[in-house]
Image (cartoon, rainbow, N blue to C red; front, top):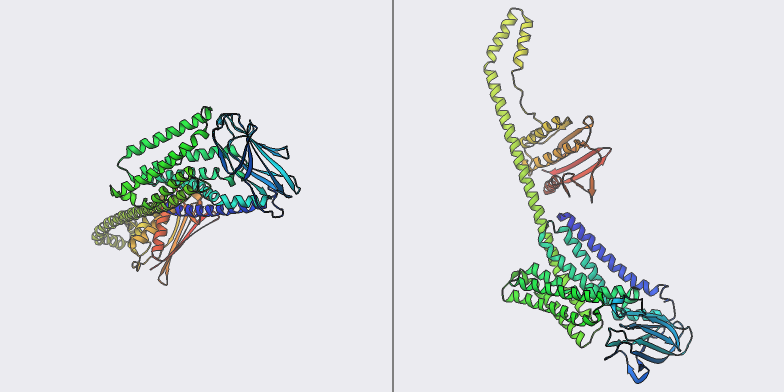
Length: 612
């Protein structure tokens, strides 16, 4: 990927990101209007069901306020919550289930259920968190609402969230206001991670140092999965609770590992072995946790809490190590990471506190904000670094090409000088013998032997050398290049028609730059003709000077096969845009000119002008 392609891809990435954001907003608005959620209803006031009567295994324990957490539960315990509410037409009930099968009764009638056996993988032991929107009977009356939970084998503590009552539009807007920001940030992190990794894969072959951004994109993707898949709004919109649960768990488990790899690749730390050991141990711990979960020996519901703490604590330690590298070792690579790492560490530490003493929902929001700031900050720095490396590589390639072209021009001029010198020596020798030859011719004519004189003239004319190279234009350097490629064209049996007007004085344009233009265009034309049958090969080149502008036009036959993207033609010899074409364009633009390519009826036409 060259600099031009990188810029084009960055523009496309920005457009895709903007479209994704617009689609996200459209999704939220469209969901509020969709028929699926029956939202074309009258507005009702949102009501919270948080005062309920609690029974455990049929024993009344009194009234409690939701949300609440029940502790010291045993497998098979039956938890019952009962309340009486007045419902209105078009009312729905919004209730979140957290790790235990639930049955919903309305006036003693079973109305809905969630988490029944067979609705989640057997090895998971308990159902995934889910969010239910249940349409209630369309009548205004007081109703008894009863929630019955059956405690599975793997649950010892059960979270009981508050339920909400209202029409679907009110319920959706409640979720949107409560979880919309975290939902949007999670989705943006996922998309940003995918885009970052895609760009990195495309440029790694040319910029190996960009490999560190691959880990940054992976960290962004994992953090996005954790936040998005555990978001109540996502659970409400996407009817795949088991998939979301696993996505959230994997994102949480692995989000710290790419940060360690990113730090190892970016900082060149003193204690590289500590980095490697830490991420190897964490990778092993998380792999064991997943294997135990899949085998059914130890559910993730047991280990997610400690593993959440471990992941967040690792990221805090990562931030502290960046500070150490900068302040203790004066590591210049750590300078650009100081501020984003400080923000990320504070957010990760706050998330740990929020887990232990809840004060903000959703609990992943603070960490997501920290990740977003970190990724945007470091991603922009990495983006400009990659662009600078690509631009420098292209400038180096352009310089090498121009140096090579100048060397080729010097070789051509040296060859032409040698041929001219040889021709001059031969002409001088012929001139030395000319008077003797004229005397011989006079003798034939004095004797009236015209035939003998003509035969003698024919004999000596073969010994007179022609000037080895044609004079195609007044500029010696350009003439040398044109003659060189003209010989190549004749050897390849290409019909040529050259009418070049290139003055010796080209004003501001050095002769070697004009030679680059003529040489590259002539060479490209010859290469294009080689794909055409011999009898159809031709090259026509002409130039003239009008009002201090030198214009040049070259037409050549070709087989009709070409690659064009964004007005640029790409080489057959190598991947990407041809360096010869790039060199010509660079010279033309350097002298305030313009270059144009056209294709029609098997003819490739190139026209340009430069200001003298």
